[in-house]
Amino acid sequence: MRVYVDCVGCEQRNLDAQRVVDYLKANEVDISDSPLGCDYSIIITCGVDSSNEQRSLSRIEQISKSIPKNGKLIVGGCLPSISPSRLSKYDIYGTFSPRDIYVLNDLLGLSVALDDISYPNRSRFDSEQRFGVSSDLSPREEYDMAKRGFKLRISEGCLGNCSYCMIRKATGRLKSESPDSIAKQMKDGIEMGERTVMLMAGDTGAYGRDLGIRFYDLLRDLISVHGDYQVFIHDFNVNWLIRNLDEYIDIFRSRNGHKIRGSNFPMQSGSNRILRLMRRPYTAEDAISALKRTRTSAPHIFQGSHIIVGFPGETNEDFERTLEMLDDVGFDFVTCFRYSEHEMSDSASLPDKVSNDVVNERLDRTANSLGDKVKIIG
Image (cartoon, rainbow, N blue to C red; front, side, top):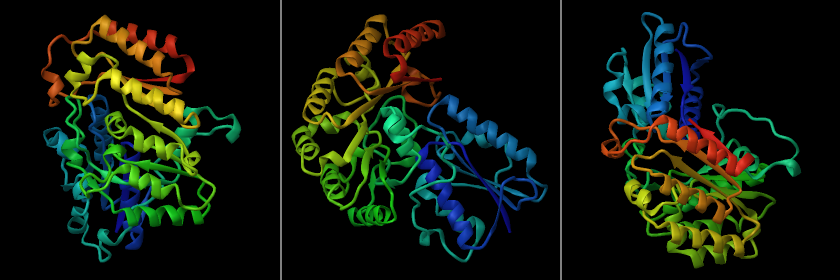
């Protein structure tokens, strides 16, 4: 059997793709770098918004044209759950989502089951970026390098209900990994010489609420592991920081707290009106207060954020509130996303769409305001 594996997705989907590769290797399958001549071609997709969905569909189109007559196409990742109708034009042998990846056992019929393959901590599908020496790295470069390094997936899914988000249709409700499993992976990685650890999840701050524990419990235990390393926190919804600010500050200021190097806190907007339309569970004032107190108490931890520009109904006043929020908090880096609407999202039904010209003007203002601290997406 000869199989081709591809991925168009985030770091978590890259880990899924790597697990598929490890599964195939365990079954001594010939893995090809091209779909040409393959018995199966497997692609892990993204459907977070319309632009990433289109990227996935374009790649499926390319692969479909290269598959031999008797070859079979399998589509995984988020797209099959989010927009199954978009896949109907292709001759697809089978599909799977992040939560039912084990369908591959039935589709491929291999002797070693996917259940027996450990979740990987690195992926060959992560894009390579070259940086300077460590002392010359900006906070964004440090964070990006950690995202492409040793990762611990602590949970899948989330507890949120953001109006613009489609990912929850694919990843489902929160499912946290056991703290013992995470701790073992952490210890093994440090013993093997890993110097950065990225805690990955759809929302790291929600970790453990399905198990009766809290993310700060896990964080306290992980940074107690002996070794020379730094911990980075992926997409930590700020509402969890607000809820348990004292507990987090105690950890950040503790003897081992210096091991926590940086965290990304997606704010999305500085306007309370837009946050309500987005169904984000906090106010701008509470978030700003928590982030500033964290900065004062733990200045060694750099802070990043995401914002969305051009959300339906966003007025000039709403946008000004976002700029004021960014200035007030003083994030070390910001990723600015142009609002990209998925037709099936709840936000698609909102009125007062923002024109491309207005969005472009606001993106330019954001870039001028933040300089090299901001990355514009879309």
